[in-house]
Image 1 (cartoon, one colour):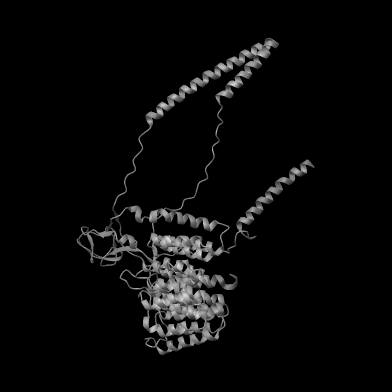
Image 2 (image 1 turned 45 degrees about the vertical axis):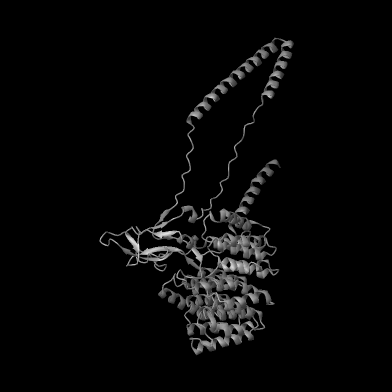
Length: 599
């Protein structure tokens, strides 16, 4: 395609496929990384392809701290191309995430420390804001999980005159203390949120609160409550996002009520933030959640997408929110921590990169790194799942059911209603007919005969009406006999059993329990039935009904689509436009012969 956009996008997509360690085998990821690095070395002339290749390399080498990869990305950065340079900076951050390179007590080598120092100097020399932002986010990712070790670096960045570097410092602080609940970090973030002169820095500070407090998410709505009433729209937007990230997948009614006024805010991007935040809270919730308000929210999103009077940013928020609600087929949720309480580096880094879509739309796709599948699967000693293992859920099935699929509205065919003749009009018509008949009778014998005919018609009409009435009475009588009593709605069961494997959300796991009387039993009885469960077989001699889990790499891939060129609606080459032209041409052709014949 022209400009290399398709090629650049495909390289980025390849990186996303192999970016998550859970979704790709080590061999496949290494193969993809080698392929992408070849493209990276050969694409310096085209910044669009370079941009896709750099992000792909960063994703496939995520957290590896590989010096060779970093060296290749640094070469691309020094070409001083704004688009390619920003991608190279983000990619370097992904490769070095959590390494703490450049910090005083870092375990990373001297070479990496020198590299980070070079990046800081280059951020002061370059004139491209994109590259400066990329380097600031790179430094933030490098300091993930470093806590006190990162204090010196973050303090230096916080004191910088450039607001973009201070913006990076806020995300650096959020990632360094991610999940720790550190009072020092919260104090700095809150102080910056109300005192910095740059709107972007204040926005980053408020969002950072959700990362620091992800293990105690209920604290975030209380902290942000006053900030939601701020005069600064950037702070209001960030507050919506912070509440959404912290309370993701909980369906918490208080948090939804907190964001509800923001859905009608004067500023379009605040409305976008409120939509995204609410969608994150409603992730994986059934139609019964929050007194069925989720259904109203879904309808609101559908209306906003089709509303011509809404601004682009609000529409974009509605479209993204629709995607968030149904992310991963409603089998995934935003989760910064594992079930054992450890913070997940991939999710935290992925979510921070996704939030950068505010500045650069291609980073929207990073959201795939932030979500976690909520599956429960019981495995035996051979890592195969027994199909007869079940989990008991002590709740109504509707409480955790998937929302109903959308149905196309069928056009109702309007039936033609017969006009009812009133008795008064019938009488008046008969009266007029008799009057006319009398007049004709006076004029001669012919009129007498016609009057007789009219009287006969009237008598026939009356007798027909009486017969119809009698028939109607009979039909009603039959219907009354046939009317059966309506079936009573059966009460919904208060518990049900879930097969293996299945989706069990975090909230659902709280009301689920193991049935210890069945053949397969969990090794750890006290744990909640969530995630991967190792099972023991109480009757190993009996025949087993087992299923095997395939890795994504082992699954058969669908055939790629045939090459095509996309044209927007209204474009001369669009299929619909061509069809309309043909139809109009046919119409004109039909009219011409008629004109000739009249001539």
